[in-house]
Length: 106
Image (cartoon, rainbow, N blue to C red; front, side, top):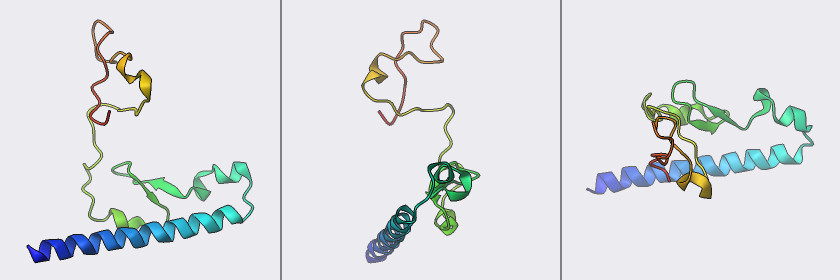
């Protein structure tokens, strides 16, 4: 039981260190006058999608994805996070057009 807590504490500590380093990188990038068109390019993006899962991670921290299974972010259909209009939206798979989206995150 103690080993489990120690392992969990180690992982949390590692993520805190990652977040701090990303925050510091983002702060330094923001202070260096980057042109808006350059800031939106793929080469200067601060967060990039993992090629197999699509999960975004901080550029330069590819190692954080090593323990993530390839199917970690796999869904059978695309889910869009929506605000208040999610209750009235119809499902793309609905035959009558009145069913609400079945989104596990809403």
